[in-house]
Image (cartoon, rainbow, N blue to C red; front, side, top):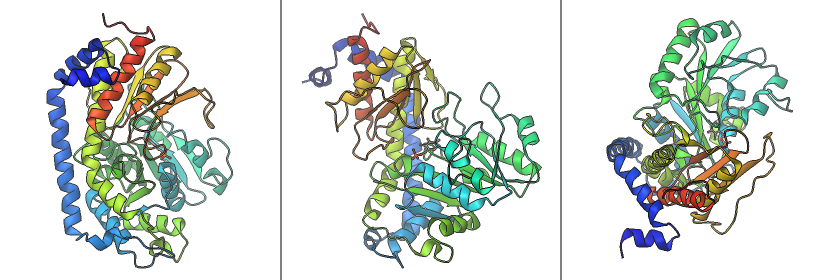
Length: 427
Ligand SMILES: *Cc1c(COP(=O)(O)O)cnc(C)c1O
């Protein structure tokens, strides 16, 4: 049997397979560059594991208070090395990305300080954290003010707006690396570096924080290398490599991490407590796999853009644009097309492939949202998934894929469902 026969048996028509093949052939050079990125990031991770002398004992967890947890403490050194921080906090007790970011902010801001976002409005879930939506326990309730400098229409930093927004109360400046669910561009690490340089030229003692979600291992360097003071992310995205079942990290200046540890557990206990339970093997192995898993997801994103742009759909980023994260937005123009796309992704999933996703009223969102995710780790967006709000321009946010062949099958299945729904004709 030929490859095409296997696709046929999986429900992919010849026209869809061949359309995918043509798109893939154009991407050879880009894929080769992504492989090279995975290679150098793999070396980075391995070098840190060797330097910190990760041993078999590190894979065993602790229980109870978790005093003297060698696995946990060594893993935090590995993260600090790879991301060029003085110190790191990498814990299963950090429940998700939003928690990691909230922890970083609450622990490093004090009443009377101003928190300034210079990349426009931050990720949706931070509205409650900051108090943009009134919420019990928000930063606003603790007397931390919020200011925002919007991006320019071309989604570059607005340096005049940033200058005007910084004052004597500005303590932490946030830059969100990835676009999240906005339709702006994501920032390269160099662009982040320029913005940090500008901010520090106005106020040298300000702390710059980067929301690094979805950005890890996409480039050959990370935000701390261009002057960020601390950054945070989720372990069920890139750095967990698909294996971490929970967790978040914060990496950066010792002082910032100490503040975070005291807030995560308790002043006085700090980083010394926090049993790692059974998470360590997956944390280490996932971090080890993360560079190649991220590369697979990135290739999937590029293939999706190449295919759907070729069919006349607007894609952000464009197929030939440089990438700074693993998210691909495809504007599908109609609700029916968005739903068909998500149904295709779901049907190609290893888990719950027989389930049909339906739009629903998700807490915290004003429009109905449709989500496709058949993942091993619930909600893990480093695994193949797609979702989008049912409103103009009916964009599907597509991300992940632990392996490139799975990402490819998912994309072809999405295309097949669009063809079956009469939204696209390849004839
Ligand atoms: C995913 C994400 C978050 C929040 O992470 P959760 O794990 O979903 O809480 C924050 N910022 C950005 C840019 C993200 O992509």
